[in-house]
Length: 567
Image (cartoon, rainbow, N blue to C red; front, side, top):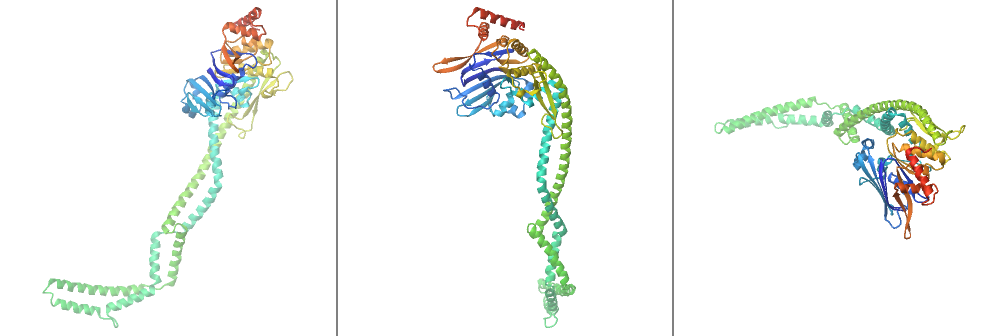
């Protein structure tokens, strides 16, 4: 709720403060005095984008500052990140907008600099505007839907909150599924390639121990003839066959010679024993070489098989990192990635099932909300049409059109309905969208009738009516004033008006006027005393300044309005 509005160096306003109390505050003044500057400044404070030429002549920047009263419930409904950014809590909130002549604008919430979007998020719904040319929220179809939902009651708002949470989750899941579908083609190609690599490596059946054994056998078989000849030659040498010296005989002579002197030195006996062992080793060696050579076959077929198998090892090594170990590591990696792809497919299935479940929940909630909207639309139509009759439009009829969309394709963030308020001003006339209603007077009364019907339904807030009474007069103007006064018992109202029948109901009367200082003209605000308010009413009724008759008439008008006797 708005408590006060301060404006400095904004267009024609040098320094002005509008303090608001409960009830009805009216702003009056001559045409061109600058009344709409106040609503324009307030629009900027609520998040509208600034245009050029708003900084007063001779100033570097314009300052617009508002003091609001926030409820704990209102703060709880805001986005948590915005609340944390500005440190918001229930109680007083100071909102500041600085407009620099150079184009640099700054926004503050309790002296904390925030983006314009965050400022709009926090205070955009604290003040509602209605007027002949700028109707703000009520002329927008989404707000009309919000209005109907608020009128439908607490159950509707609870279901809408549940729907909103489910819808948000559904959008997130849908985005994840869309991303996975976009990537699926590439994933499938890579999975095919991985499956090929896995099949190739598994068919190769690589084993490090086998490779070592195969290489050893290949080396032996590749030189088998040479090895056999060497073994036979060495065995002949050791055995003294052919022309080879008799190694065993030589060792025997050597042992005998040492034995003859072994009693002289024990170490010589030890050498003799070692020569005996050497003779035995030579014999065993020669025998072993003959046996090995006898068992070794020159087998070209076996050698070819070894070469073929080792070519498999070398081929896999070249393709997968240079060694058999790296090829085996690649096989482990491929298996792990293929397993992950399988898990991804399972995730897709689970994600699709979650998406379908959330969508079904949204459809069910949307259908429930749609049924409530249709029922509430009928009640709201009756109330608004009854209000129109009291505002000088006895034949006027408002239709609240609820247009359902096909589900699930037609779901949006608030369900499956479009809502539109239509007006038929005369019997037999077709209903027309409020945004396209031609008569400013008719539209003003429709907006007021809707706002009156919603008194007590929407949370208490500050309502600003910028010449909502345009195009009406006489008894209708009196009825408009009475309706505004009734609304001000629940909401804080600020009304810009030219009608004395409306101004007479004011709890606080503010005069907007122009003054001149040197060559400069300024817009000024003045809160009027009771007698000053009577004088302003007299002027509005066409009376001359100080005319006793006109003053008496204005005083009587104000007195009857205070007593609720105007009709």
